[in-house]
Amino acid sequence: MSAIMDSEVKLETAAFDPRFPNQNQTRYCYQSFVDYHRCQKIKGEDYEPCDYFKKVFVSVCPNGWVEKWGEQLENGTFPGKI
Image (cartoon, rainbow, N blue to C red; front, side, top):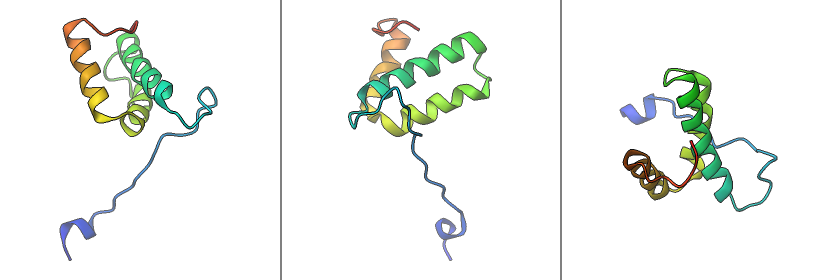
């Protein structure tokens, strides 16, 4: 057996959020990204409950958006309030 078959892979997606009931998940993606970074800013990087928001935006957001927003945060040009 290969190493891939030996290890168990658990795939998950973001849980339903009643604030974002539509199929278009753009706002859910953006808000989760902002919530994650706000949570880390307020509670610190080691605060595990913040990881919920990261799990959501990683599973819902396109990778290109996350990369772009990360660069904007580093450059101080992110359009949201964190």
